[in-house]
Image 1 (spheres, rainbow, N blue to C red):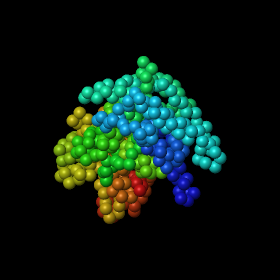
Image 2 (image 1 turned 180 degrees about the vertical axis):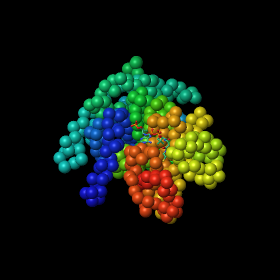
Image 3 (image 1 turned 90 degrees about the vertical axis):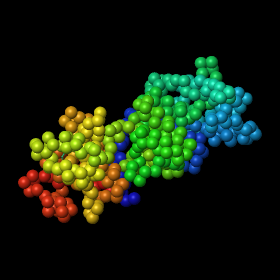
Image 4 (image 1 turned 135 degrees about the horizontal axis):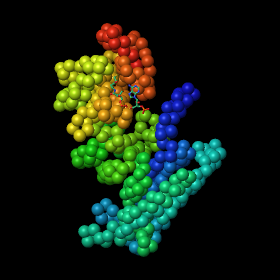
Length: 431
Ligand SMILES: CC(C)(COP(=O)(O)OP(=O)(O)OC[C@H]1O[C@@H](n2cnc3c(N)ncnc32)[C@H](O)[C@@H]1OP(=O)(O)O)[C@@H](O)C(=O)NCCC(=O)NCCS
């Protein structure tokens, strides 16, 4: 990377840095990830996030460490419904394995040798009895003993600490009777993220939903994939917890590629991402248009055509172009639309017919649609978007479009340019 590229990358990360400051992120570090070769680098990246002002709660699992510990003592675990029965006799060994993982993370976050990414890093990590657990009980006649579930989270205490400290929680819950319960780390991370109303819940995994067009999914899309049934049990569990977290008001859940060095930073601070994101914020109501939407689109755009803001589109033209449209539907009404019409010869696409119903303006719908179009254009390997606008130059300027000349346009667009309208031509690179 040249210095200039480096500087450009750094500048491009600035909006993310600003957006994430003081936001709460909950990260699940599985026992496997703590054991992996990339863990030291992940810790450096976590430290960097902390220093950038992100409030961090780290939840760790310890499945493989508990397994190793029990094997060393020649103890074979009983599993019921894929959950280990944490027996009274083995609980001391289980707790020892869990504590060992916590110590490893504590120690790594305390590093600060000169000439390492942790140089000058002074992170205070706090753990505590913030999680109350309860027994899973007897399932189909099997007593799950000290395998537990989350009863409550002391969110107020965790929140108080997050201004200055990283909070590290083990997959243990303490009961009012003074017992400790072995908790599933995914459930704990989900419940903590929900209790804190976290901005992000972050999982790591080596498998994702494969979709060539997008790496962003709504909970409805995730449920559809789960219903298709060809998703591994590990990914199924993560997706189910992601859906639950979003239902419980976590804004976004990320599943980041655990085999990628720097995956966390790539997912958070670049447009490319490194895994998948599940959110309903972005997708609520936003979808590709179908032929049935033409009536709704016409109703939305006709007043704008009459006032000369949009150029007139006939029903026939809309029918031909409908596959290039996205719409936002609310309560059965089309409240916004956008078209992205590609010109494959020039690797450009025209953004057209951008409209948000007057009752719904200034709520970010225009921005959401534009972001969706940009994502799609990038996935389709297009290079530039362009727009011809008379009244919304500043809106597009604020979205990163810059003015350009007519020569920039594909030839057919140059030929059809309406001199009387004197539209401004603006473009944005999506590479
Ligand atoms: C332009 C338009 C699509 C924006 O949609 P939106 O959902 O209201 O936009 P967002 O909520 O994402 O953004 C709102 C911000 O943009 C600003 N904005 C809205 N329209 C603007 C315009 N025409 N010019 C400059 N800024 C504008 C708002 O003031 C607001 O800024 P603020 O948050 O600082 O107050 C919508 O106003 C619209 O439908 N306008 C009429 C049709 C049109 O002009 N389409 C463009 C044709 S090329």
